[in-house]
Length: 256
Image 1: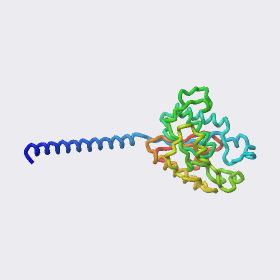
Image 2: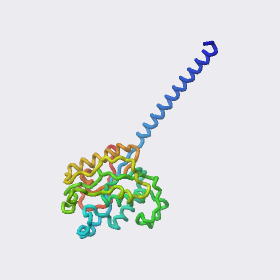
Image 3: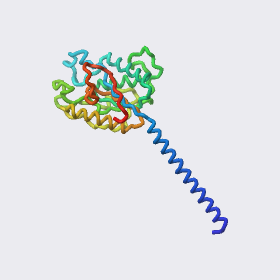
Image 4: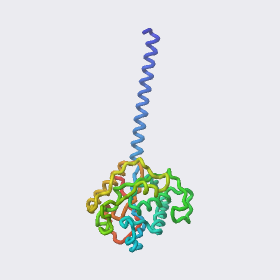
């Protein structure tokens, strides 16, 4: 190799080494920035009970219901859910990125109203439900999660009303159609792939709720979550309040 080529080779090698060093430094800084961003983000997990169910408002409803174990909301329940969603949007102080919901109809209908309010575009304050509300579906995503279901046992469901064959018959595609168009995220794998078996104990339900909340929080550590579930969630929070309350919420610590 002549002197000129040797000089060019050394010069190129030095430039390459400097470039690699600079690239490594930038990658390290980028990694640190991401880590710091994660450290700065405080995840919020909100757990919300469904709205007013029809069988509590109309006790005779179960006598003619095809699915007496799966009551829908009353109209008042839909209004309450929508207004709760609006309140979350306007007063919460942080964005909800994802909603996870139990497959029971009352929870699906609650989530539909809440999500519509959260995603509303130019929301008219006179609207009391989602019927005339235009939404921006890119604001959040929704997924159905079996792990958020009601206690599958007599602690929450009267045995006389439960399906005799133990099949609660949830048609997930049909339930997803009830959620606001464009908001369903089909790519999310469920924590629980099926419902618990009949006669789930309160202890087992407590473990399930704790497990599913931890799993979802860990799966989406940089997103705030809203979980729409049942009053039986109180077995996890150990809330001893008596009486029926619809659409109450608990905000869990980020280390749930």
